[in-house]
Image 1 (cartoon, rainbow, N blue to C red):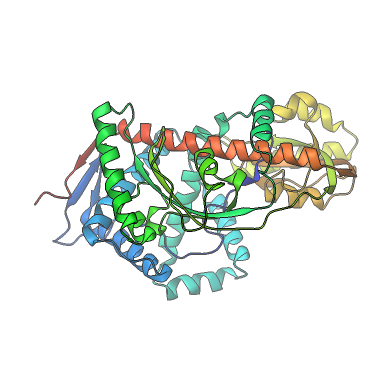
Image 2 (image 1 turned 90 degrees about the vertical axis):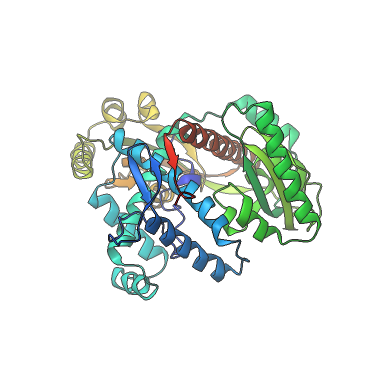
Length: 438
């Protein structure tokens, strides 16, 4: 873990905190005579019943959101492609021994219930009222966690942001942290890996057709739901409200000069072609000096694995904690036991601002007095033992901007790297499409 630490991908931000009850269906349907294979993904199949269940689920979701539905055959094509990419990721996770054990699943479900101010029984009742069985819900949460951990391992753990990149970002984006927010929607037409000029030209032709439909007055959300290859396409392509620094750099460069309701020209990136709509903008002018309480902390991280369970990691940290309480040096124990890069510095994380760490870590840290050592704390990165060294109140205007720039750049680079990784995974996966075959 390169610092416990970026809040942007804390586990169960997994899209579930708001309890939108629309979970993909992976469990094999009951066999019926009309079922058939619609795709083969490596050595696994996707059936017509699985695809139909996903389409029906998305139709209900779009109807709740008030998005005009694209033709059903278009939805089938879009969702079959998503099922293929999802299946390829799950196969990779299985092949590389990535797993989510029952204890981790139970803690995740407890957090989902708490985030929605429900007990476990109330959560179960709510799901059943919406037609989602408890076993299906558990399977889908397990899958969501697994895909999140796969992304963290394969993509986010390799993202590096340099000080030079931060300097350049701040110099080129003086208004990035002005407090202004932008409501943006987009359409992505994904290009294949190492696309030929002919493929790019054909893709541009599709993009021009989409632009013509938008110019003629068609609803942007409906067009996005029909044609966009982005994961948010079926939600109308909405990215929601974001400050400029939280938008992809390609989008930020154009929306800052757009007025609400305007649509960008066709934009090109490594992922393909994009069309961006600025829905609205608000706020701005936040230039106040920031006085903030900072915490200097250190920690010991134990990561779980195939050979080290959560219970083992927790027990190991309890033993280390007992040694610290009895006078052992925390820094020396961190050097000998921590799986974090901070181990070489005795586990020292330096001065931390609110929001620098994932919520589980921050809550435990904030509850400690200087010199106090926490009980073992679980986060998406593993299990931590935390010690607060000291606290202070500091003018952090410049530091806050640098930290915000680092987080923004990391999120941008991670999103772009994830899109590239998914495209490469899809291109390297054997797929036999049978949807249109009788």
